[in-house]
Amino acid sequence: MNDVITKETLDIVTAIAKQAGDTIMGIYHKDFSVYEKSDESPLTEADLAAHKIICEGLAKAFPDLPILSEESVTVSYEDRKGWDVFWLVDPLDGTKEFIKKNDEFTVNIALIVNGAPVLGVVYAPALDTVYAGAQGLGAIKIVDDQVSDIAVKTAPDDSWALVGSRSHRGEHMDNYLKSFSNYEFISKGSSLKLCMVAEGVADLYPRLGPTSEWDTAAAHAVVVAAGGVVNDQEGKPLQYNKENILNPWFFVHSADIEIPKL
Image 1: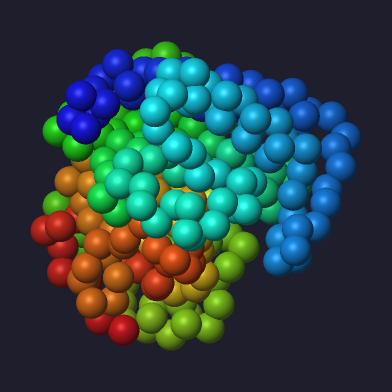
Image 2: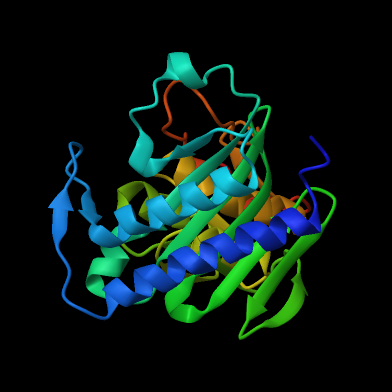
């Protein structure tokens, strides 16, 4: 499977993500309908349009690899439990941010191999910013077609830079923040929080609330490629393609940083 983890694959996936992002932006700049899914989370026509573009693009470029998208959750665990290699997609991560029109939403595409994210592309179309990374290739950020290498911070400065959810902060996070004597807290939407750690803007992203596998997989791959970790409370990396697609609580930071325990 190493023959798929290449710069060419990253380029192909980036192009697919940007195509989906262009379609999302076409809807973003007009009035659009908002629906409610069975779990009461919001869904827009942009989610569905991006899902179609991404799935068609990946199927054409990589016809032998199955795809699990947030908008194709009818794929049962019985069907996918034998998938050693597959694409995990969130066509529009941060739908609430999209609806609020605050620009903090992303397109997430990850390649999962044996339960681990080994390649990922995160595209923030309203910011025209790409984060991409893969096992053995490092991580990059692309802004206005300008490419730069990125890496996690190996140690916090005098004050910790913490990033957390704009829409889901909560009591658990407030209690955890008491572990820090000096910190700055940055609120951000979607998978951009993980990417801020990957590029060294934030030291730590503690997620003490619910997320699903497609929310984190692409940015998880970028973080690892940038020298970071995405670990649960026991210090183990998040696993993907579980029967229950919900993630446990997790922490995103440099592998060199020791963080306060809960």
